[in-house]
Length: 458
Image 1 (cartoon, helix red, strand yellow):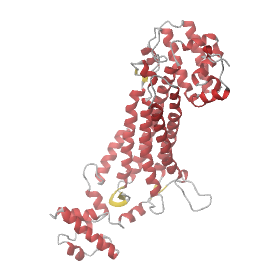
Image 2: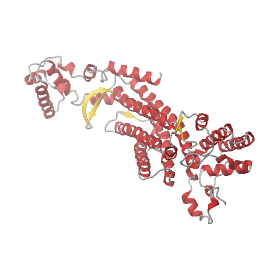
Image 3: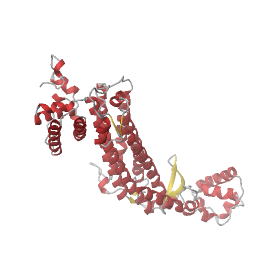
């Protein structure tokens, strides 16, 4: 098969070399973007009188036919034509004849592929933002149902202080809100058109880049032709934002895995998001959470893979940059799968309030309340900390918790302690009193919920 670029060559590559160099196996995902970019390019060429009205009409008709076939899954691509761009150009020529060869006037595959990826990522990022918002909605739903549910809060994976479970869940809402903001802000750098930059230096044809960009819905164009074809920052930024998003989901997944274990029993996942064991009949495994935790690594890998590919490249385009696509596609697919799965896990999980209540009454997470109680009565906090620590040690020796100690024992440690200490040491009291802005106090959590709903447009 004669290559569309083969005029200068006297020998053809062997098939295995073609297969190694081809990208059609994966860049065919850009078929609709490539057709969209070509359509805009032809309209611009016609408006600039580079193509006649008749030529443009014929090419646009052919592109429309290819679009219909693509939507129906009827296009057949060939490794011999290397990539989605040459495959579609060959199919267009087959469809409408030699005039199809004029499609590539004033354009290079370098600016063409960059345009395709800008279009692709612009659409996918918007879809991901919507999926993040849906996930946030599930978090808000569960948080609202469990404002008054108290759970041990942890530091160093050791019980620290009692908190509202709704407060704990909303932590992930705010992580995701920052992810959404980063993704939204990145669109302004994705929303630039490289089309018309040519191979690297522009073109001698009297084109109108701004017009082509407007046809494609871009907000602007690259100001430098070399930058237009060599820039992959927008993909790196997407992969970085995606890595952050996956990191947040992985942290949440880890807690889901812990909470659903027999050791915690804080939640139970719906059967839809769990699996069993091939040998142990009793098992109910949080496999979807584990998969999301595991897939985080591949997204990180896609980010570092592209950074490594780009780090030593001279301007402008190099074949190495063909490696920019598979990681991008894989990351989009990973996010598109992980976000709805996590949303479903959170929305359908059963919260075991009985286990949580038992946990917060069976630990020393109220010790800070005793120290604060003494400090509020005038004792220096460091002294109050020491007194409380010694009482905790006494409890451990006796097999008690702080609320089990007789008042006489408490007063022996400090005469400042009175009968009201038992109410102070109640988990609900401890949570309610933490009413500082952003705290776990029930009223503060309800304020958080109101703001979260407002941000989601609920």
